[in-house]
Image (cartoon, rainbow, N blue to C red; front, side):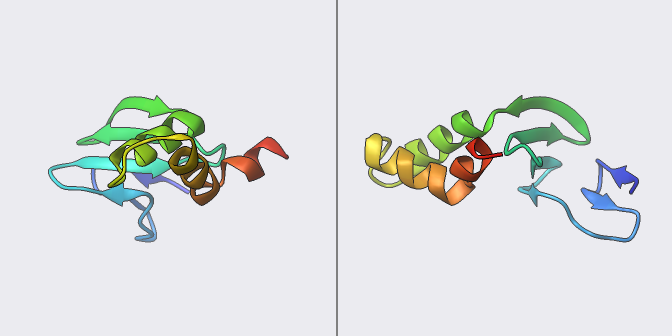
Length: 83
């Protein structure tokens, strides 16, 4: 389905990912990676394991082995390994 990166929506109005503000969007891809766009331009794609590390690092207690494992579980990294 055609996707408008400026509005972060498909032609039918379905929203993909998370629009933070001012055109900054985080879009989870089928392989678990997260594509970062700014006003419709791809800035980077973060692999699933690095994304889990970002989430763990931003948690209240910071990143350690336990918070990283929890972020991997939450993001679904383990299910990606089994594919």
